[in-house]
Length: 330
Ligand code: 9Z3
Image 1 (tube, rainbow, N blue to C red):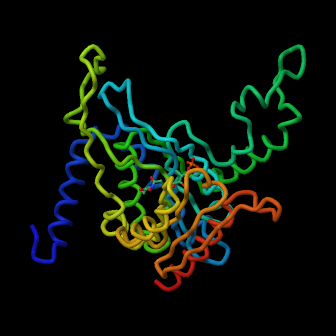
Image 2 (cartoon, protein in one colour; image 1 turned 180 degrees about the horizontal axis):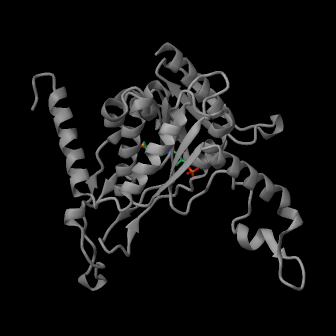
């Protein structure tokens, strides 16, 4: 319904699209388990007098880091799907820096992508880091990887042991958006202490479950002609309805640098984000540009000669500072 300013109609259409997306999505298999884990994690990290309260007496801040790409299944008994390039490196590295900054992290990641604290291990850690120590086939860590393995285990166990890391995984766009909604609704009680750091590469198009083929699509039927619907813009409802008091950071990815900042600026305004991190595909590990709601454009770069190992270190430092001011001024 358009009441003259065009806004009501737009909002109604978006709400209807979102409703239809969730109605048509296959139910999340592990939803009870996920909501129990979430409830426990958030309760533990928001108890004012608990052992997880920071030394200065403040309640802990909690960030939801999304990571990796969503798949779009083409068949219900899925053989084929559309995917994207995202490795999950950004999300995994950022999670490590958030934990180091004292945050509790809900790491919503694509199954099989990079994990926090394991980035310095080889691609196949089990087979490459270990060897037989003697004739009786006891296993030991190969000396060339012993420091990296020790560091990974120590840091991971510390984060999990202190209750600072909850890992939840998704594969499809349906799972991702259903879980993001559950997380956002659970984090509402945290008010401004909640942060969303949306680094996952989310599909723009999908096949609605209702119109999806049940069985494997047959190649003998000739060329495939398939219509994909647009995934509704959940960022709008995240900031407006699901978690209206949270500090929200989204990412903008382009391959054409000429349009990157313009598109990031548009996303900041359209989705009412507090910050948008603009990155270009090939240089994303070297530099990102942070666009703020005060019209700042802050370049954040990796500089190994100055000891800045990866771009996520200074990026998270900046976001943590801005989030603190947001909480104080709320
Ligand atoms: C990003 O831009 C991330 O920085 C990357 C990280 C996916 C590039 P990797 O996982 O890469 O370390 O290999 N994420 C968001 C990309 C995205 O889909 N943004 C949407 C858009 O650009 C907005 S939600 O339209």
